[in-house]
Length: 77
Image 1 (cartoon, rainbow, N blue to C red):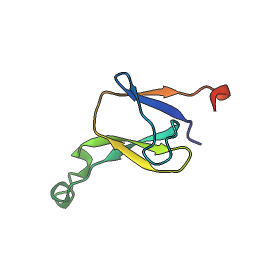
Image 2: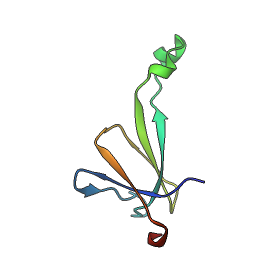
Image 3: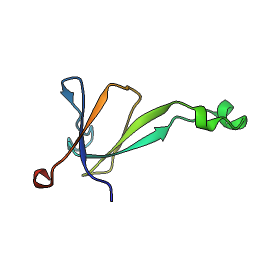
Image 4: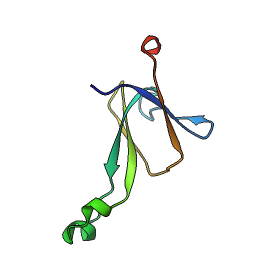
């Protein structure tokens, strides 16, 4: 099972735009384009960091490579 993370860009902590939660599951998300898929180059598309809110499930996408993820310790949940 995925482990919760907190995220920040610089000194700004990320919170869910829907429920204001601050715990997320993270995953890499491909930003597919039709042209690249048509010519079988989908693997070369740009990626984003997907943060899925631990509380409500809202999906946030960040193409910014400066996003930092921080593991949450067991007692913090």
